[in-house]
Amino acid sequence: MPHDVPQSKPRAVLVGVQLPGVSDDEHASSLAELGRLAKTLGLVVVDRVSQKRSALAAGAVIGEGKLRELGRATGGSGVVPSGVPAHRRRAEDSSDPDPSEAYEAEAEDREAAPTERARIVLVDHEISPSQARNLERATGAEVLDRSAVILAIFQRHARSREAALQVEIARLTYMAPRLRESGGGKDRQAGGIGGKGAGESQIELDRRKVRDRIAELRRELAAIEKDAATRRRRRAAQPTVAIVGYTNAGKSSLMRALTGSEPLVADRLFATLDTTVRALQPETKPRVLVSDTVGFIKKLPHDLVASFRSTLEEAREAALLLHIVDASDAAFPAQIEVTAEVLRDIDAADAPRLLVLNKIDKVVEERRAALAQTYPDAVLMSAKSPADVDRLRTRIVEFFEQDMIEEEILVPYAQQRLVSAIHASCRVLAEVCDETGTRLRVRGSPEVMARLRAGKDA
Image 1 (cartoon, rainbow, N blue to C red):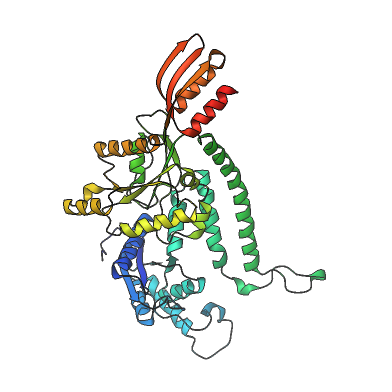
Image 2: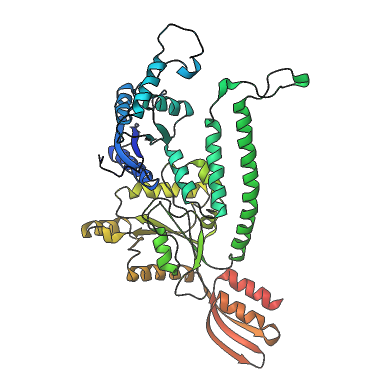
């Protein structure tokens, strides 16, 4: 593991448990992905601790031997102290040796430990508050589970007010059950009539404040979502494409190539959290709108999916989903299933989908042939290749044209306002003017044609 890293970057150790039904490759891929999450968060991974178990250890996730190994990487004791923490027992006059006092003495030694020791432990699972506390006491390091890491990245990358609200709601929802008691949990307020009975403890007060804050944020988010829903309704008459897929699969790069826009493109996980909507370039008649969406990932926290549900509405309401996959990633079949699972969660599983195997330029020729045979309907391409992007654009246009119908519409001179609407929503094949009005031969979707006829007759 690399130890000659800049001193300014915090060091981390990855912890993973290979559970039954998980192959060696899947386990290794999951840990590698956690390492990429750590890098995105600005951490340097200096060690990994992995173990095969039938289930996560109830106390501290991993077994005693592996826990001691983890302690060596962090400078901790590698043992979960028994009993209550020493700082809560110092007031008690007891001559019996306290194992947690020895732990605190070791903690003082760890302050002077070599700087290459890790100060953060990242666990590739969602763990309980008690498991996190036990790991912290055994390692002397800050402990973050996979959900906490993803939430921290989302919080750092949120730029718009909507994304910031969504992330904060998810973060507070995650944090509420993990609030810790302080000061011995004494009552803060008298309870009951006349002040009798137990009052509200500090932990209860803190949790109520968190619940109140979540409710306040949800009200603010609801107002923003209402405006977003209005904008989506205005776009309902236009063909829409939503780009979905695993994080860092190249969605933003493809968005830029298809629309000429300048979304953030970075080689890091969850670089894009905000939905961007742009027109397909060169523009078609009718115009096709393309939207980018937040990336998916394995074990994506449910609170995040719930908070970003309105953002993911772009995917649910799109006429076509471009499912982008990083073909150069050996784990991409599993990533396809993760994306499909999230789409099921947001009720978009039945939407028409075009599989796009991106980054094909990083795949050897033999592998390309195998992929083409395995996924015959997919588009194999690189977002960096203009020729590949043109081929994908053609597939998109063909998708929307397959159901179009051709019709002749006569617009009386008294209703000439409809002519501009027809040009905006249909492909005009011919246009002539005679004594009765403007006669147009157009191609468009059946829904648009019905609306135009209704408008003409109104």
